[in-house]
Length: 218
Length: 218
Image (cartoon, rainbow over all chains, first blue to last red):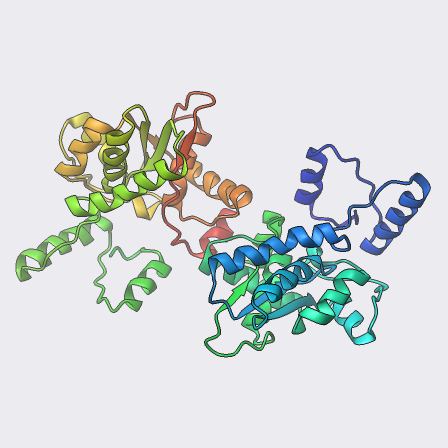
């Protein structure tokens, strides 16, 4: 993990019995991960590159269609791209007209840059308050699904994410982490380009945020 | 309303088209209410004294039994006593062994004092951070139901309520108002006297809390 990882997330992972190795940055942590994997033959369970993980994340799309059959647009934050790839696959298969919009932080535009380059890009560094979206690279599988199935990918700033987090707390009474507020930030700033009156579902994914961070934002 | 009513609550009531008259305290506001009613013949829809309101609040009890059929204890905050009267009536009719515990703030022990006196008491003044529980009196109907159906009524301090509010935000990711945290405060301080391992449901009722208040508590 990166040394600046959210303490609550570190504690939760430790409580499940994991041994954690820290590196100064997310990129350095990923390098250490690759090194460990090639040294030991350990198996990586990727949060976004694995087809079965993506399929599992696709069940979020099935739940959306079940709960909101009239949905016309779904807005989802992107880290490595697994969640949106799963949701887009499931939803487009059942309701191809539903618009799917991805949202990345301006400081970690991994998929945004990869879409423009036409291949998975690795960012030298990522800097965003939304640590849950700070994957410095994506993978061929989620990227190809996003290329085919996602209608748009937009960027939001850290300040926009903070404003969305506070608005969600104030109006929905839900505490999400910055990653969980990014999709709402795209709506609040009109970046998701919602047609007026369209039935829109926003996925709020992630609640690992320290209360001292929340206090600072308030 | 009392002059120190939560601004968000005042704004929400105004947005529904109400004309609001302020008085310095809750007790003074209730006195004005009685005066207005006798002057004009207006009909009061009591939040706790009316049998149909209590019956409606009883549906919370039905939902609890539906969602948690193994429940052994339900902990509910008390303002005027309507919510707990409804829940206790519904739950005891269907599952008489479920224990029902009421919780009041130490600064507004209206039902607690009325139970001890054996009749509805009117408190000269109520002072609690849990404005949603600050009814300065109860009524014969909810009190008689509480006397018959509620197993215990306990008191929690404002500091205990604040700690519960913060703990609910941290662990359940839900923002409740102080009134909505009082029942949890009774559990956290072992005042609700839960048998260890008992399946317990806590009702978190109310989300009208300003973010500046939340910031202060954090």
